Image (tube, rainbow, N blue to C red):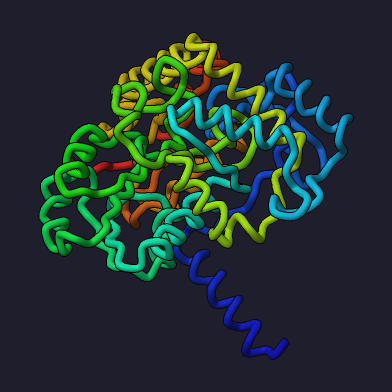
Length: 407
């Protein structure tokens, strides 16, 4: 490689360093049965105990004995890998049964597994534009990067409406020809602010304009609704949404993504989406673990109740301590506003190195510059003692690195 080529890479990294958002990954070992406790490996190779406060394993299902037993049983029965793409050698009964379970969870006719939630959004949204060449897509301004990428790759007419602004959405929809196929793409829980979408109002608008709806329930599935179907189930509108996308990597504690919807639509996506056709299937052990986790979560509303109680208690404690919890959050996500990349990273480093508390900074491009934050995600297993320790640590760090939030 030429020196001038290497300089391009060096310049890119230097720019990130200069902004204070260069990330050094912490070497963390989760320990079976001890979540949210883990071990951090230092530069000397020695381990020390820490508490994880920013995991997306929201219900601790990645440590569930039943989920682990299901993974082991599948591993013993069929081996490590799937053996290929779903079209060639990578479909097992675990995959089929998991898709049936996910379709049932969301009240849909069919489901399709992908290797991640990112891929399921990217592949599905870009494929819908292939199936509808004159499609217009209307996207919420705070949609996840995977949705944005899929919509960009769709190369169709697209409009971005202000976050959760149904009036702006309607104004943009009026720009589209009445006969054109339309799709509204949005999320249920917006994971950086912790707020939720007005799903019912968006469905009303979709019906009025003859538009399809595509809902990302990644941060809602498993956590809301009587059976964990997500915010749409909680709000009684799940049946009104055409496509519901989700992940297996958060509330269900494993990995993978999926989309659910009408059987003929899912069949068309299965048959034409490059992100599905040309990717090796999820390992059978992962599919088996996810299947068991979905079944457990559906039958355990107490896990959801405990999660929401924990998050509300933590928000209250932080506010009492003078820590600026973002008021937008009405969910299990607890974002603490910092507003500066370098300071955000410094606070995170002090919490980890001095207090054994692992909570990562969220910087650009995940959030806009000037809105950097710490994103805390308590679980049912973060007890009062751990919360009290967190609050004391925050008080100490805030005194060292004061944050002055406008307004």
